[in-house]
Length: 246
Image 1 (cartoon, rainbow, N blue to C red):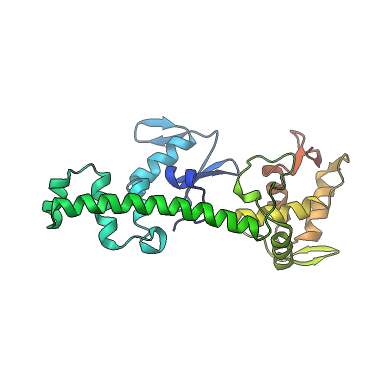
Image 2 (cartoon, rainbow, N blue to C red; image 1 turned 90 degrees about the vertical axis):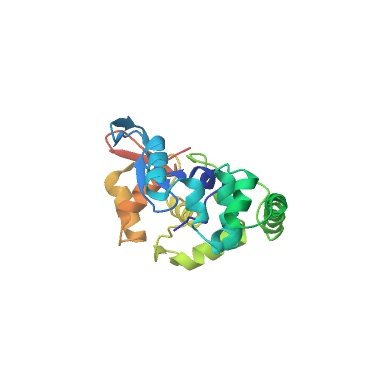
């Protein structure tokens, strides 16, 4: 399993930092920020624990990404093999001997893979422009209390409406059918739900629960937690009062 919604930075380190946790992109293992974890005789923080986990359980980020196969990397089996040898620092002569090819072929493959990387970056830029042209806003809609700002906020009005129409059975009164696990969709859903709360007003936990239970009776507690974690709502330390974060 590889989280295809991860950013390039997240893919390069092998874990995402979301909802106060370091989450492995390859198996979903979570390490809560602020907690201390034991690895062998070491006590480590969450990011270090995530890195050690990826090394021990998945062979490292490079190998884990490569294990995703052609669907993930776009590389043939032969290209994946030689890329792995390059990563290990094997000299061209050793690679040629191991694969039964000439050193010239090894050098050509190295050049070809560099070209492929350059083309991938160009294609990514083109596709980003295409998405913007298709209706995504020049400036992302970011709520004031946002805890992390990235490409998840790049949602145009048309796309946001489609997401709302998919996940809500009714907008008046507001009724949620299900809560998406995809970050971009989840943010749209939470933004719509946060609109049910009046800025400047203080709510008791009982009042918050009543509002959210009407919206999503199946799991209003998770909705409340997400609204806090994603910075839409804030609360006192004793959870006695809640309000729209501004």
